[in-house]
Structure formats: C-alpha cells, structure tokens
Length: 179
Image (cartoon, rainbow, N blue to C red; front, side, top):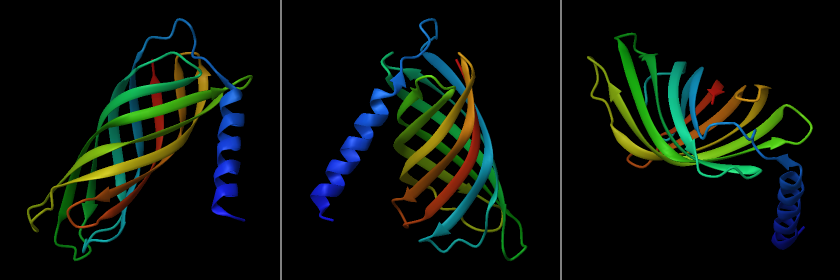
C-alpha cells in the first residue's frame, strides 16, 4: 500500500471515531484533578544505571471547550524512587509537565479515549551520583471508563524523550480523573 492510502485510511478511521463521540455532561465543570500510580521505566538512549520503579502522580487541567472532542490544557507532576543497579543508593526523579490533552467519550457507552502531549522537566537527584536535569517532550494515550458523569478511571501509556541526552522513558499508569 502506498503512503497516501495509509493516510486516507487513518483519516477515515479518525472521522468514524469522531462521529461516535458524545459531548461532556452539560453540568460538568471545566476544571479537573487527576491522581495516578504506575511504573516508570527508563528504556534506552542514556547511560542510566537504574531500572523501573513505582511512580505516583498528581495533576489537573482546564477544558478549553465542551464539544464532543474536548481539548484541555494540563499541568502535572510525578515522582519515583529508583534503586541504583550498583546497590549504592537511590535516585529520586521528579517530573513536571504541561501540555495539551484531547479526550472523547464514545456515545452509548461509559468508555472514552484520550491523547496528550507536551513539554516536561525531569529532575534526578541522588546522594551517590550526579543527576541529569533536562527538558524533554512527552506523548501519551489512554482509555477512560466513566463510572459517574464527573469521574473516570483508566490505563495510560506515556513515552518521554529527553532533549539533553536522548533518554527514553516509558510509563504505564492507572489514572483517576475527577471533575
């Protein structure tokens, strides 16, 4: 298949999905808060000497519209503590991110999808090694189960790419969003 036919197929699938979306609940506030827990795993690109670890996150945002596909501005932070492979100590990672999110609910079901992307500041600190603080970009996609009109729960997969040393990090989390 040609690149053009792939593009046409992708555009058709996106239009079909958009036509099945429903607008948010009319009484839903535009502000939301999100809690999460998951696994952060540096995968490649940089000389990291630590593996995956439990991660917790807190964030929030503001919905910019109330159309079937909702665009939001988001701001969040997350933390993880990784054990050094050498066994000499721990590395604490703080991440602060801001970006845009698009979400949609699938009509007739309590399910939805979201995608988000933006910029992230990543801070490494340790008593043993010198940390690498850096800017990077992130992109994520996830599923939402709307268990009430004002709250959702679901998995998300996020990919971070560092601009300083090419570090790639994958994060899998379960997120709870409350309006």
